[in-house]
Length: 64
Image (cartoon, rainbow, N blue to C red):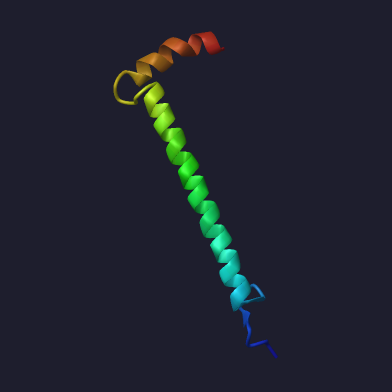
């Protein structure tokens, strides 16, 4: 018989599942924060839609 304290299908208790959920949510928030900072830095370096493609085309031959 199944244990009433376990959350199906993981086998975790409700308290364990909630604790794991907080870690997952906090990790996602950190990931989104890093992604936002990275996008702001890339946009500051060369804004897309304002000649960014031209800049990339002029730099690409030197990278190969």
